[in-house]
Image (cartoon, one colour):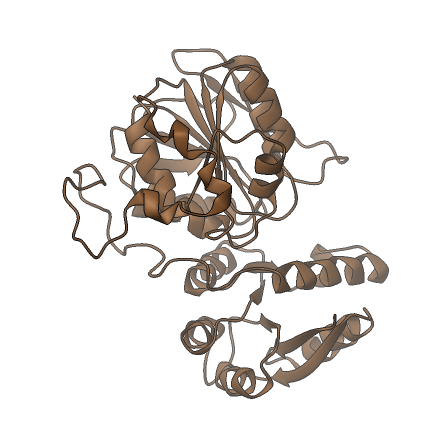
Length: 374
């Protein structure tokens, strides 16, 4: 099947080069090119592409405004092209919140060293994004102000609102439902790993947690080094718990979530009252920097049987082997369900390997953390 693409960018040079690269891929065809957000909306309605590539800074209408309007009219997977700067990260995170699926650096030299590798990466990313579920995320993505200090789960519910059990009626969650009634358990640490779709998924989960959440949290999100500081700052402003980018030697503590820095590897040692972070240079043989398997593997060794591992939306299978190690040590694994995942790759790999103790919707994960961690 050929994937149709609409390219949106105000640079004629960039539009031409991206079009040439994608058209040379064989199973991708560029069906149109727009120079601003307003044109993008009109052409998306007319051409109905499978994927839209979007710049964020354009005349007449910027990319974020265009993404919001496209998601209102007819959700289409959108791949943003961004500069790898703090400001570029901030804007890209806004675009992801507006509904974009993923992003890539606009400077192609930051993607690959040669044209053949660049074509391969762009082709694979477009095909992956085409298989995503842009309409799967609940809206609005995140409240603009922190939630109240009370527990997220109310005591009574209106009759029109579905219960968590009803929202977990998918076949894949049926087998895990019996474990839903387990009593709260004490964990030394909670580890959460994610990739594509992860920035918004993490916001939805973490904004449900109270400031006095009783366990330390470590976060592994596939993201460039220039993006993780802005992402940590964003989460910290939205959440009741404290969130910041991890540094070497940081001590874990309840109510604190530490985000693995991009381009590095984060490992957790069983030192101090709750554990200590080690930030290491990444082995060039590792695809992901940071890598969920690396961090989860260290959790399995340092806190056997005392860790809650959670795998959220993302491409690929990073986290599966780390979850296997944690499971073998006696720890507990949760994974996000297919319906609420933007990309059902990482959680599917964990679930299909039989490692998930519970398969949960995105909205239920934060709620279950409040209920199930003491």
